Structures are given as C-alpha cells and as structure tokens.
Length: 188
Length: 241
Image (cartoon, rainbow over all chains, first blue to last red; front, side, top):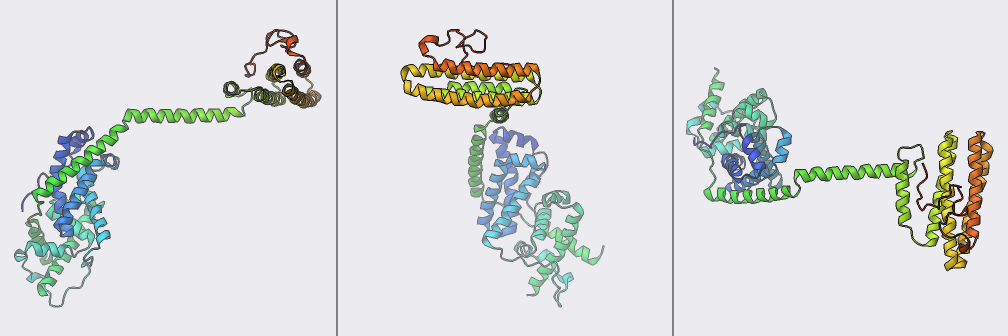
C-alpha cells in the first residue's frame, strides 16, 4: 500500500495558528497534508473520480476557511476535516442519490456460501471497493478510515463520535458484512 | 482464535494492502488554487472586522444601549431619582431645539406641568425640600413663558394675546391643583411653599399682560423675577436642585 503522507495527528495546532495569522505557507502545508487523504476517503465512498475531486476541494476549502468554527469545537483538526468530508459525502448522496444503501449487516448468508472458501488474496482492489460501497454508511466509514486511511480505532472514534469499543464492534460487523458481500459476488 | 476471526483478520490485512486512490496532479493544483483564493478572500473579510474593531463596536453598542436605557429611565424620573439630572439635560436639549414663540410657549408650559407633577409626588413622599425646588422651577417656567408672550406681543399683538390666553388657562389649572394640594398638606413649610408658588404664578400672569416696554427682558424687575431672587429669569429649564 502506498502511504498517504504524514498520518493525521494533533500536531496541526501550530500550523492552524499560523493559518489564522494569514500565513499561506501554513495553508499549503495543511493542504498537502490532508488533500490526498480526503480525496482517497471521498473516492472510496463515492467511486467516482470527478465527484471525489470536487468534494475533496470543497472539504479543504471549508476546513481552511472556517477555522473559527474548528476552534470552538475543540477537536483535532484531522477529526474535524474528516467530519467535513463525511458530511459532504452525505450531502452528495442526498443531492444525487446513493446507488445502494442496502445493509448487509444482517443479510442472511447464502445457502451455498461458505466464507471459508473465499480467497481474499485473489480479490481485486476494485472488487473490494465495490463491495465496501454496498455496506451501510457507518460500516463504509469505519473500514475506509481504519484500513484505507490507516487511522487508529481511537482516531476513528473521535471522527465518528463513538467510543473506541463501539468502533471496534462496528469494525467487526463491517468486516463480516464485507465478507458476505464478497462471497455473494463470487457466487453470482 | 476462531476460524471466523482468522478469516476477518485476513480480510482486514487484504484491505490494508489496497492501493489508495491518488488524486491526479491537475486536480491537486486546481484544488490548491481554489483553496488559496477562498482563504485569501476569507482573510480579507475577517480583516475588515479586526478583533480590536469588533471590541470597539461592541463597546459602542453597549454604551448606546446603556445611554438609551438611562434616557428611557430618566424620562419619568422624579427629583429623588439618580436619573433626574439627566432629565434636566434632556429638557435643555429639547429647549435648544425649540424655535418660534408658539413652540417656546408650549415647551415652557409643558415643563411647568411636569414640575407641578414632580412637586405633588415629592409632597406625597414628604420631601418638602424637593417639592419646594420643583415649585420654584414651575414658576420659573411660567415667568419665562410670560417673557416669551411679551416679546411676541411686540411683533404680533394678536398672536401674543392668544398666547397670553393659553398661559392664563395653564396658570388657572395649576392654581386649582395647587389649591387642592394646599388643602391636603399640614406641614407649615409645605404650606408656605405652595402659597408662594401660587403668588408667583399670578405674578407671571401679570408680567405677560404688561406691555413689553414696561418690564423688558431680563431686566431684574420683580415682574421678571417673580421668585423673589432678584435674578433675571433663567432660560435654563432645568429645575433648581
């Protein structure tokens, strides 16, 4: 996996202070630090490069021009920017409609489905992306943040506004749903 | 580790190995240009209302509200109120903006009525000293009104006569109220103050009925200073304190 740049962290505070003072270099640094990650997150959610590009730019614009709101919320900038991206994604779904929002969390396993037969190593990246986009909103979010964005469960918990335990449980269910979805695709 | 957990672990590892979507260079450049433009615009907008300026604006707004509140509170204040001096300032301001003999007369009679109301309230609160001051101020207003009428009689006798009639009616009303007040109070000082006020009001009426040449404006004659102080009538409508 290619790295997405420096991991999201709390050491953005000095940069944010410089941005507030009008330092364009600090703006550039934050943009470089987060744009690829946000683009990747949004693309994984939407599956369309054009939409991902627009939403990533929109997210960064909102994030870097509304730092006064960020200060009031008292959370890490990384968590805040992911929340903006998430909200932008939801808005996009509302405006354009989501292709599929079928929850596979409780979907019954196919009679012939034997998840143990699933050869995950042979799955293509596209298969995985497509199957993830069939999961529920929260399941998508947790898998993308944990495995594509390489964030810790604690960081994901902050972004999603949940406890770490809830995120871990959600992750477990999301992986189960994904496995079933992938197996269903393999059978079909 | 159960088989299910093992399978999910393998799936998780596979997800970690997925290559990330990377934005095309053109998209990143376009994004940077848009973000930079938005940030510059935002910074300009913020600088228009600098924090110091915001503080000044907030202070001014608070001061305006405070003054407005004090003005509102002073409008009906009585001589024993902390807002009463402000009432005098407002009355002086109103007087400075009042032009024309008829308006001047109306202004003086209005203040005279206000002073009488204040005097009644102060008697009711047993503040004879403040009531006495209010009655003196009442007579000052009536005397000033008389001088206005005198001056108007010289330029337009008909209008002057009509104004004198208005003063006469006002004095009659005041006198009736003062007579009623006189029957209610028992304090000798208060009684004396009321009687003096009635006398001075009558003298003001006499001043208004005399030809202007016989008294003159502010000439220090008893007619021009019916309160007996010997000083010419003050144009200041503020009650004496």
